[in-house]
Image 1: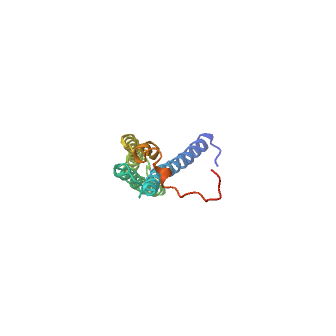
Image 2: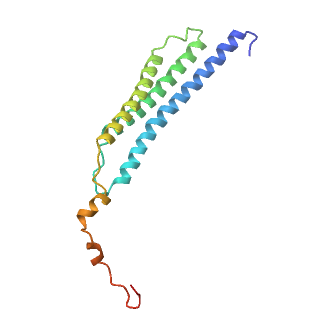
Image 3: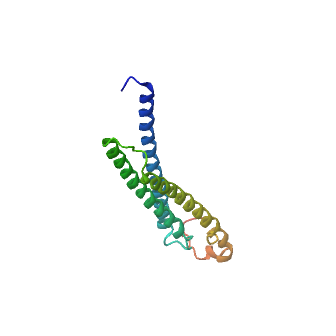
Length: 160
């Protein structure tokens, strides 16, 4: 560290920005990837049940697009940092690089894809009404007393 407090403050701020962007990448990847896995787990759980699950193709596509945007963001951010490092080594102005703006747009796109996919999933679940439950169907499916007649007779030595 130098003796200049402004330089030290600038350096620590820059390091914290790198840390925050790394955490942002992790959030986008975890949110979109976690949502996609949750949808797959839900669909795997309802396969073979007596009702058709809600259509989750749009939310799934949105979460997968969010993951692609997140990966592209990381790629552009890496090349931006590499370009900055090369410019600094040549003693050029490192602040002007178009890759940073592309990375920002892709990052916002990843967050937007997560928000859109979440909204579409909520709408799909709100519109989804499964078949009526077994308890509500039971009176019409088995009239009163009908189940008793199919029961096996009790043993002769048991008192009723």
